Amino acid sequence: MAEEAAQNPPSSARMELILTVIMAFAAVGTAWAGFQSTKWSGVQADSYAVASAKRVQSTQQATLAGQQRIVDIVSFTQWLDALNEESDVDESGQLTSAYQPTKDTLSGFLFERFRAEFEPAVYAWLKTDPVNNPDAPPTPFAMPEYQIAAQAESDRLATMADDAVAEARDANQLADNYVFVAVFFALVLFFAAVAGRTNRPLARNLLLWLAVIGVLAATILMATFPIEL
Image (cartoon, rainbow, N blue to C red; front, side):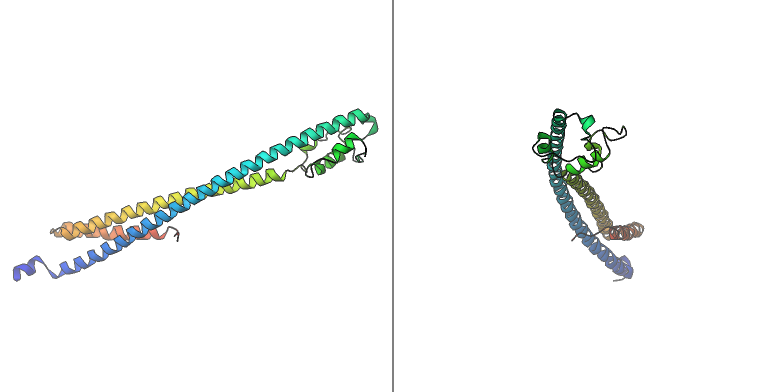
């Protein structure tokens, strides 16, 4: 009995209890870190899917904006040609702020069929007196009033896509961080398991302290990460 007591001092039971608690905590931490890593990987996949969808929608709107811009250019060019054929623009002063489309003329017909988004830019351009004012913008397309809603929508969708990509990258980093913590907890389990098997007091104490420091460090680090449920 005396020899058995010498080999298993009272502190040994306390050591085993501490190691059991550490291993249990490390096992729970490993499982939680793995769960969070999976959840954040799902967030990453969803965000990339959203970004892809927004990119497609942005491209569609940009294509529509380009088509509408071509329509505006063609209709504006045809309108100018019709004006030139109908009268001497310099003498008539038709390209002034007083311009009004003349009914029953080709120029009036074309002007009334300008797109609703384009017409305000034309009126704003006419107010600059482009015939007599050398500082006037060369065309209505250089006016700030020339706005295409489809282009604005394309830009908005592109921004949303960029935000979704940034969110996906952040989620990917968080998933990697949780994997790192899981590996940390796995090292704690290793240290605790080896400490419970060794009979050398110095080695056991060293492994115990490594396990304690490791589980505390991993827990504190994991506590700084956001949680996805």
